[in-house]
Image (cartoon, rainbow, N blue to C red; front, side):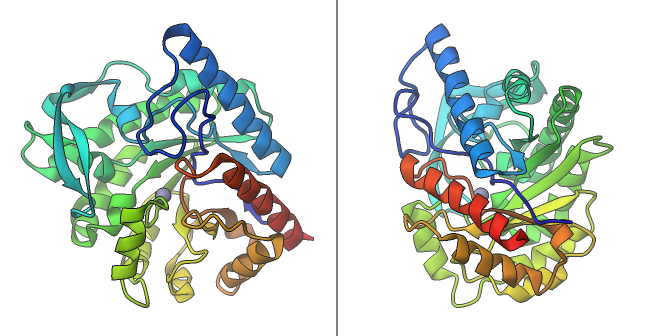
Length: 337
Ligand code: ZN
């Protein structure tokens, strides 16, 4: 079987939709015009992935302002009028986050309309991303549960409901984005895996977990510098993730200091291998992509490798992100040739 391809999830939004190169961009439009513009941007994201030959495409997350808060906007018990500034990802940076004021309950499907629209506009396999339970718990201010594990488990139940809705419209893969796992390794072991398993329990679609070192923004680049010559977080996480019921683990490799030997720790799962670095504007050549894929090939057979981006490309320059997308597709074609 050939090496497959996907992207971590997000692509930059066009400037006519939202402020460019920002993590929490403001929308440029509102009402029906905004809804229409989101759909047009989704069409472009799908078209560009199709043109690059990506096996499993996403909607580019064109309809959400931020990957965590987009989900929370549809959850009861989350109060966006009570924003609190707090350190997140073990105080790596500060963010304005909403307050949990009561039991959380999903008021209805969150990403169903976007998923349905994307499903109708591509013939390729479709992946929809959702924030993982630990990452959600780390991106809110809790004034109700008083315990991070309880909060994460409450969100895991809501994620399970959302996954059922997404399966029903033909979504091929649902991916939980769990960058927080890399910041809280002890919690990951104590309850993070349990929360992931609860979120994907008995899912009919394919399930994935994405664990990365974050977007290519200044705070992350600084943090990565502090991690030393060899990043050992995956060494601890990959054996734990291998024991969960998820099908696919998405990690970063390109341009990182992740020791490739950690790939030997992945048992019985497919690996979405980051072969495109989102922390640099330098566009990889197809040969660069092949070289990173070949590192993966030292540990995994082709049928278990899915070439991907290290992380979402939302805050990047749009022309650069699309050039990287085409490099990804060309590199995978070359690797399979
Ligand atoms: Zn990521």
